[in-house]
Image 1 (cartoon, rainbow, N blue to C red):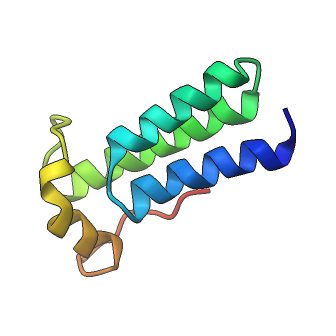
Image 2 (tube, one colour):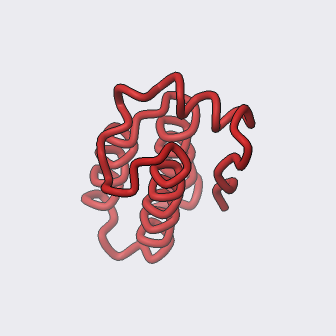
Length: 92
């Protein structure tokens, strides 16, 4: 699999997580990418990063139990845009 193809999967999943605030869609995209290339260490690294990012968002919105943020779009969106006191760290 080419690096460009991997980059597209990764960027698409990151967009789903950070712009659309949809961890479910991001996870599904990474699963599809991993099915296409299960040997990619880079994909596994990116899955870990996006999972860590999601964990940080949950902590910042006050839900360390791992609840679904799909219904929290306004809260998360505000924090992702820097509206909170401590916005989550950038990916990468």
